[in-house]
Length: 272
Ligand code: MG
Ligand code: MG
Image 1 (tube, rainbow, N blue to C red):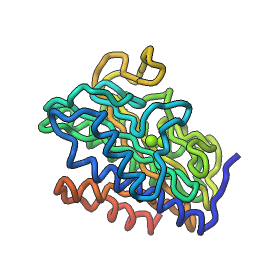
Image 2 (cartoon, rainbow, N blue to C red):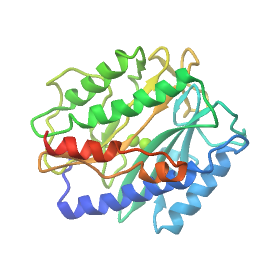
Image 3 (spheres, protein in one colour):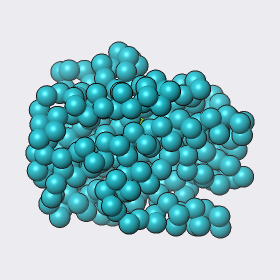
């Protein structure tokens, strides 16, 4: 059952989304060669608690840490460890936080120093596909429209779209209805309802879409060990249109990246 949110609840969810957005922004300048993911995890936990929130992943389904940190061929759900990041790595960081009883859930894949052109393109296309998908989250559309748009965009670029892991409704629970796959068929699946909030999160592989789970019970990697990227926004359906609750602006500010992608998205969303 889809749990719709009142406009007051959506404002509370915006706060939760801002906490995780700021946390990733804080981490952006810490991601560099030599840094361990356990260090990033500890910074994130302190930051979230200092902002009056609770780490959303810690203890959820018994996950042991604040962040999911997934380097290179790891798709998602990587567990922080003492292995230092290396120049040329990529690292997907997924962060959850609870404030006012509502979850924020946000992810970004960071380059560590200079990365190969081929991998840089994977990051660029995966992030673009996130907005391509979000644009379909509007009145009259269905779950399959978002998945279809993401899948088409990524597959036409030659990438593999992970099937086993999906986006989801978001609210007082981390995973609410509906599931939001990054693949699908136009016009299929549950219809979008005013006031619903979802996490849209393409997980896109450079090679095969196939993945495997590691014996730790958490880490998901690509079967061919090629890199994978992951970007996630929290989005509310307001006045029939998608409204971004999370923002990459803090990351861009930290990294000195000029980007108007979210502003552009908002302008386009007005005319959907
Ligand atoms: Mg997430
Ligand atoms: Mg999520």
